[in-house]
Image (cartoon, rainbow, N blue to C red; front, side):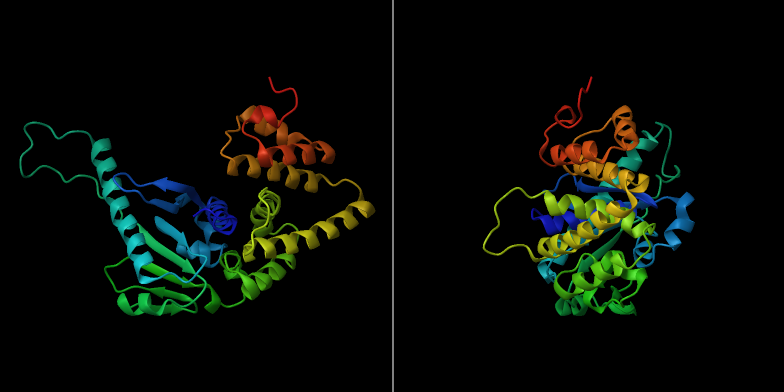
Length: 308
């Protein structure tokens, strides 16, 4: 996936899932030309936090491949996802065997079995109802907007337009477009300033509103346009608050995390020393300058002043 809305979706899922699991994007599947959009492995120590994440927390309760689609996925696209799921499970089994080491020479047919590997679930997320997919895999509704495929096929289908407009579904509804996205952005804006959803989404909105340097195309990405409109409104409100209240330490932390997010999206590694330096900076002008640089930088040295 190459356009900004797809990249926003993958980053939003990864950062949200990172609160309760180890999550990464663009996971290579060996012996295949495909990549998993987001692969999440739950952290048992964060079960309580996951329970508070609503639907996304429920969907990440087991190792899962997350595949968001900007348009309603076709049967062919779902088959491609299933191929990734099967290939990835094969790779996980191979890694487990390798980690277990070679069998002893005197071990016969009664040798202990190799370590078991959980079969990862496939979570397909799309805006509309994929009728051909639901019919082909005999998917049954388990809650509004969520379908499970026939037993034996570990696949969940999330239909964004059918999700109830609640906080429990907010992070997933932000993957939509048009009216669905506008409503989700309005719901996000209505949350308290310290809401965990805002800590995940706002830095990404900052980056994906400013990150595209290419001239607008004839068909501008609808999701990016909605994100830009929401952020500009948020930015106006933020300036008004800052004129009344002055500099706020919490705002500085948000700006610092926006710098780190931009660096991560650019694929630039940030050592612990540099990370601490960015998070410790309180001057909004310096943070703004770093963020502007980070959006287009090719290295960390191009962002931070006097990097040694």
